[in-house]
Every structure is written in structure tokens, then in C-alpha cells.
Length: 233
Image (tube, rainbow, N blue to C red):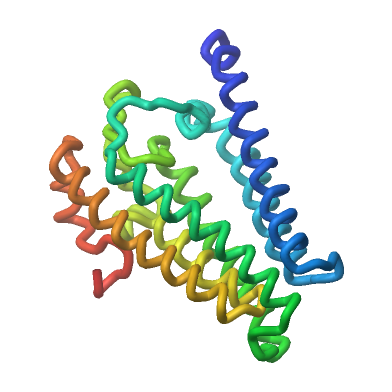
């Protein structure tokens, strides 16, 4: 009980930060588009909001300490290269949403067939569902690359980790590639593609770190051979 009480402020910080993230995406999208009647903009915002709600419902009862980890600042052992990659990905994320809104405002991209953005929105939701599945399975699903010695980190081999070693990045890449199409912007897709590429780079570097520093990970890597795409890589 005392542990749960001590974790409550950090869990609250996580929830507030995520809600602010949803609001920020909405502000960026509709400000850059210059209009409110952009239904796919609302659709993407809704997917993000539902993802936050799903994480809260599924993870707070099971692994509140994971949300404490994800809400914490100045964590020990964070790799310097990861801070650089996160900065680049964060900047590209803002650029992606700004460009998508401007594309709607100025009509840079030719209109998609109606089924294409809807299919892409469904794919974005599925991508985030994979991320949530990974978080539920892995109590050490941090936002940064570090060996969590303070939390007794162990290798996760359940859930989607039975199929690939970094399923959270699979879901994230699907989301990043699908969202620009859902928003009807080939221009924003370039930013989404760059985010996916940097995600692959981060996957490779994180996997190398885990193999070198996390007990049991090399054995796991021998059993689950592929990082992101079964049969390919």
C-alpha cells in the first residue's frame, strides 16, 4: 500500500504529461490547418487519446512502477546517443504534424481515395495497439535506453516478445508511417518515414546495448532471432 501511495504522484505526472501530449497534437494539427472541420485530424487525435486511455486502464493496475519509470527525469545510465536520437525523433514528430496541417490548408498533396486515409487510420490504431501490448507484457518498457539495475531489469520473453525482440518499435513504426497517410499528406509522410528510419537505427543500437549489458539477453536473442520483422531483420 505504501509503495502504491509513493508511486501515485509519478503516475499522475505520467497521465498529465500524456494528456498534454494529446492536446499538443490537436493544437499543432488544427492551428497549422487553419480549420476545425478536419475529420481525419480529429481521427488521429482520437487514436492518440484512446491509446493513452488504454495504457492507463491496462497498466496502472498491473505495473504502476513502469509508469513511474516513464514519468521520471534524470534517470541513471541513459545512453547519450539515445538522447540525441530522441531529440531528432521529437523534432521530426512536430514537423510531421505541422506539415500535415499546412498540406491540408494549401492543398500540396493530391486527394486520396476515401478508403486510403480510413485504412491508414486503422493501421495507426493497430500500431499503437502493438505498443500497448508490448508495454503490458514488459514491465521494463522505458522511454529511454538504459539498463534498469535499480529496478532489477529482466528479459521479457512473453506477449509479442515471443515473435520479435522489439515489438514496441514495430508498432511505433507502423503508426509513424500510417498517420501521414491518414492525414492525407505525402509531404508529412517524408517526416514519418524519417522517424521510422531513426527508429530502426535506435532498435539496432538498443539491441547491441542489451546484448552487451543485460543478463540473459544473448540467450533470448538466440531463441528469438529477429529484431523487428520476422524472417527479414
